[in-house]
Each structure stands twice: as structure tokens, then as C-alpha cells.
Length: 200
Image 1: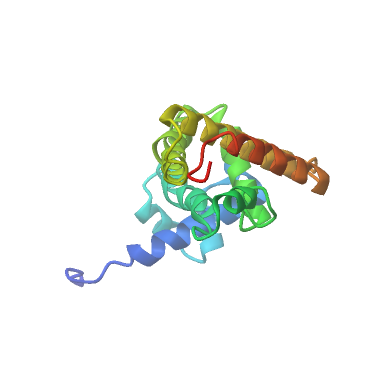
Image 2: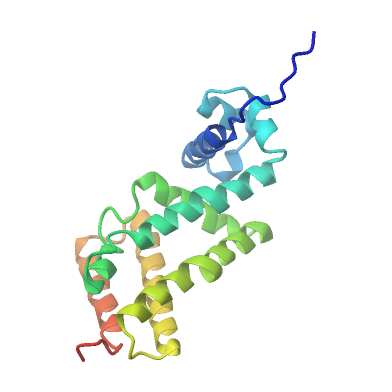
């Protein structure tokens, strides 16, 4: 006998985040190449068919993973501590804890590496940077430095983002020790201090 499922509340609101968290676990353990429905389902503690129900293909799963999980990770980093003075917020980008965990950094590094070979991943990461993170950082910096030109703000944000990316890439290679972290902080403040602030 077929049971009428009409009106049954959707569990997508809880299942999809569970699946995306499980995807991150698989990426940390096995890299993006290791992401399969079976492994994600095992990590999520659910049936493979349930993962397939919410994501019709591996590309769809990875796309959702980038757009939701990775987008939220970047937003969390860049929006952290909005009440702190600007200089302290910039320094926090290079401090331990900027990434919630080593695993989050591994996931990001995996995606960056894959973007060199995968046009779709590259497109999605470019959209996150150019459509979300860089404009948001520019708006934040422009609000703190109203005397700065839009070009100077954009250039400053891009330079800081480059330092951020390079620092954490070196970190995962065990190059960015405490001395080098202090060096990158000084470099970040030198870049930031070139912008006019209300007090200047």
C-alpha cells in the first residue's frame, strides 16, 4: 500500500547541512577526489540514497558545498569581531584561530588546488571572492576610511587578501612560524596605514 506523503514536513533544512558537514569530513580525510556519495553518507550516518535524494550528482554536491559551507566559512572569518578597531580586526586575520580549525584550512587548500584543474570550481571560487568577500571587505574598509578613494580601498583590500591567502598557504606547509606571523602583521598594517582615516 502506498502511503500519501503530501503535507509531510521537509527535512531538507536539517539534512542538507548534515550532508555538507559530512562532505567536509571526507575532504579533510581523503581530499576532494575522495568525495563520493557512499563516503559522504557514511560520514553523515545516513543511507547513500538519501544523499542522492538531496543532491542528484557529485558536481551538484560539490557545488552546494562550495556555495554554502565554504561561503559561510569565509564570511565567518571576514565578519568576526565587528566591534573591534579596524587595525585589530586586520591583525586577527593572521592570528591563530582565524580559521576555526586546521580541518577548515585543509578544505580551503583542497578547493584552491582543485580550481587549477577544474573550471567549475575555479568559477565558483572566483564568484565568492569577486562577488561576495572582496566587495564586503571593501565596504567595511570604506566605512572606516571615508577619505580614501574607491581605487585605494580596493587596492588595499586586495593586497590584504593576498597576504591572508599567502600566509595561510605557508602555514599549512609549516613555514609561517611565530616570527613570520609578526612579519606579515607588520606588512598588513603598513598597507592599511597608507589609507587616510578620519583622524588623519
